[in-house]
Length: 248
Image (tube, rainbow, N blue to C red):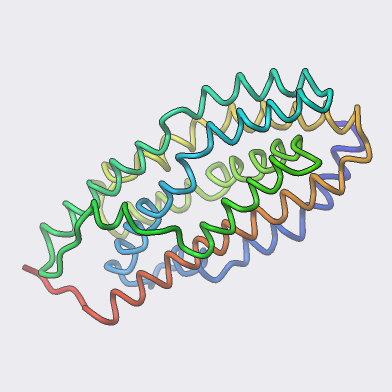
């Protein structure tokens, strides 16, 4: 690991720690959280998450074009190759939403409509997340897309296993059929993270003065994702309080 990348890693620690300390994450992981609230959280995580996942392939392609335009042809080529690997990932979240709705509706009197959930506008955190990507791609440092991907694709590796374990423990093994996006990305993002770390190291070695912009982008995207998780918890709590589900 070159010294510049070590510097990046060190400067990312405050944002990573903020995310680790996010009350929404703690709530979802807490062994005492109501099981219906966990299910409602997953409903919103999957349905609203589509808005944040569907544009990813296009974001990466646009970042590749912008990198090539400013003379970073090698970074652009690498990003183009990575973009194809992100194609269609939002469809897993669509499928998870439909599976979660079917599961919920089969057990509760208060029913949800999957299409209505999927048509909701982005939550504030999701809008922030989208804006971070668009600002980076269309700004002066499109190569910071690498930091966005690196930080986000590390989340399933760090938090996916304990979250899945919690959901299986509290909701039953059959919940795995509703978690395709998360379970797939625990495996997929191992390779993606290795790719992103290598590209970041190359970039920082070539452009040592890029570290501040990379850290700023990586920090903001983690904060935005933390806001998104808080949105999902807030919406789940509001539903749970206003219309407590009863067995059907």
